[in-house]
Length: 319
Image (cartoon, rainbow, N blue to C red; front, side, top):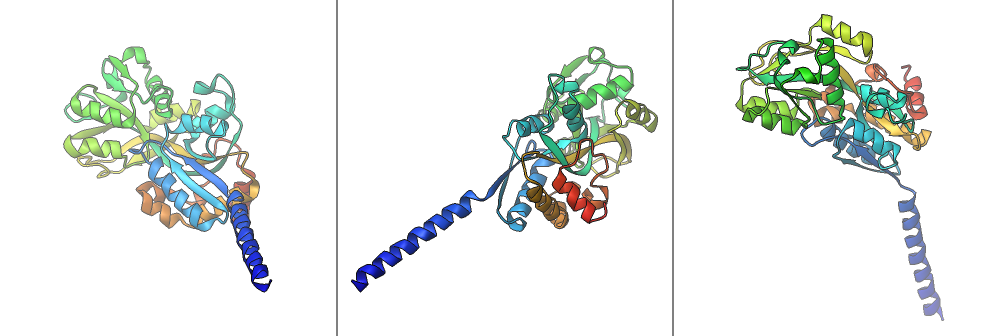
């Protein structure tokens, strides 16, 4: 009888352990981070975030996924496919206000967590091309980014500041960063618009085998842009950023942001925000642009309402 009772006791303990394990798993919050193409900046930074969240935030299981970047990320977050995403602040602004590629309707199921670093508009050509200004793109074959992407909107807006439209170009190609790099190297296009943190892998790939040139957007044109599009900022690409780039280049940038679905609760977003800003060394190790992320600049360029959890963290830090 004692043996039988002991056996029953052991079985009960095993069942309890199984049930507790199942409860523990079901209580985990799954966080999937929408990033961008593997040749860009979002992908390695999203991967670093996932590692930080898994290690530092109890009850969270995080992973990062390669995507079509900003526009695709916001639409996917709205649809409930992702919980976090990296996006450009201009694209977030368009989505929240129903502008540009979001004219079919506003998307309000997302909120800001933090601005991260400047995403620089790089207009890349080869040194042997007679292109020294945006005005020189008239009649040329130009890659303007994937159709409907943030890069494509930047290209259109910058061309407009110079009084140009796509009709003034010799040929307009809607290419991803990787495709633009390949076509520029092969001579199929004359220049490419690339909006990403510098250094960008796609541009490094071109510079590895070709002498490149990055076309400037001078301050007077940057100021003109900012009157119509206040989310732009002025930046300088330092000499030496790419092989053969021997002098600084003035241009414009938008801000990379981390956003979340509004379905994530305040406590979870607070913990995610806290973990991110208390482990910035990990972000800097993942990509050079991770070194630009700082608490002091986290709200600079914030173009949509903050999530309550992020807002709580910034208030605690006096930001």
